Image 1 (cartoon, one colour):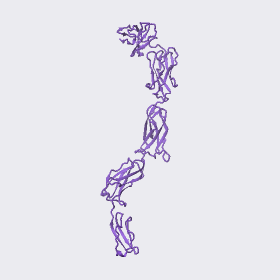
Image 2 (cartoon, helix red, strand yellow):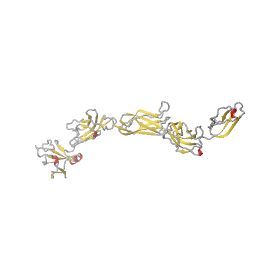
Image 3 (cartoon, rainbow, N blue to C red):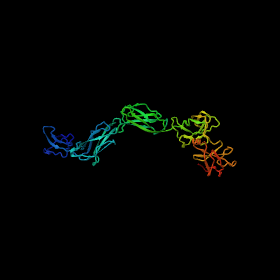
Image 4 (tube, rainbow, N blue to C red):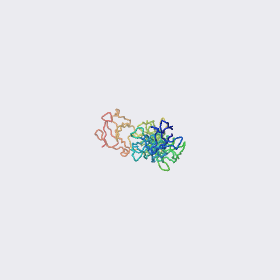
Length: 471
């Protein structure tokens, strides 16, 4: 006797030869397993005489309990951000749809940024199968996973879903450093990304560059991206492509010439080392009139070198014996690259010979130079106390003390001449010139004569302890 069934995966008894003891009847206990869920039949036929056979039909086979979840149908490949439908099917261990499945399913993905359905409980209407929608956004090969929240090990996944980048949405510009010295080239990398920050490997647009540097930065020319094996594929490095020159906070921008999408990066530019001086002085002065001179240490790109600390001398082309020039000055960090040689009222920086004269600032060790032209005009400078004076005091006026014989007197009383001449020197030269040294003053409460000076013997040996008030 041979057995067969409409269930292709059924387990059936092996062929059996009836024995006299069977008396024409034999029980095949537990010998049949039907695995395909639907209405099935079993047939037994005599192998020698096939016309002798019998069939049991109408055997309804129901699915077993769900043992796996089949995740399938999500489009592959797919574009980042595009909606994709997929189906979850509960199956028993024989591959039948487990129509009685009522579990709750939770979704996850290898794409950490994916938009996935929330947990869902299957219903009788689902018959073990339901369609869902998801959005994968990270370029690469991804997977979708469904797990039963209650039954450990009941789940499934669709793998090998290739996600390709969407269209170019923005540029990303990165510099090799965030702080650079003026004149030093730096690398710039431009990456083309879609709305989900995937590199757009197929991008073939053209990018141009601009900068906030008013000096005129050195930038790459327009560049057309390439795609394919060994090509840009959405990323290009412009090695030593950008050079900025103006100290301060600057920016570099890259812009797609077709769509206008753009990106920029901020860069702090520090000054380079000073290579010359700038001298600021009046364009013209009256011969013999003191004036201020400002020396600024500049790098090759006209930035102030705030770190300059050299020793600087000031010289002039004016060879007159009456010329007065400041002493050499050592710049300090506090100067921030700028120092003013200020007229102290003692004639500091005074030119004598009419005509164009040159002022030159020089670093005594570094060979750094700078010059300016000052036109010296003929004429009389503002009246001032006669030569041989020493000044002391602070404020808008100073005491000037001179001995009767015009020899220099220090702040101490000249014991050789107990009757020094006391005069008032105004720090404001314009005011000084306007008054022409006429003033009225009181020394220790006693009035002086109207005029340039008055004789007065101080009560203290230290003149700075006397009092001077204008009236």
